[in-house]
Image (cartoon, rainbow, N blue to C red; front, side, top):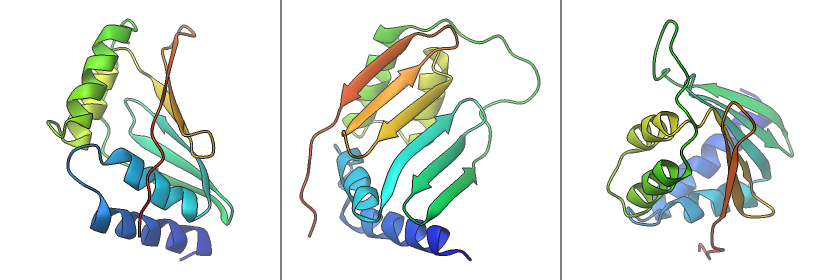
Length: 138
């Protein structure tokens, strides 16, 4: 196992130990930032996650949301914001959040850990960016 993968896995384990059910993403993000993760780029519906870290890049392939050909949903910012708020309230699983984001027309999202922002993209150049708060973890 590479240093990049080992470091990433340890950061995710630390985050899981301190992350609250409600509003937990900033805790995960801070744990990853402290571990040297610079960016995280998710591709939907493939559920592929690319981590750019100070130790090297790591790709994680999750179970895709669909198989075969499918029409890409139109980008709907209001539906995306609703999916975000449901997730932030702890009322959905991560997989449910990804599915709701896809239905809202998100084909990719990019987390910038230094800027503490997440940018969500549609396939025709649409973009919605949201900042997340800084948190302290022990």
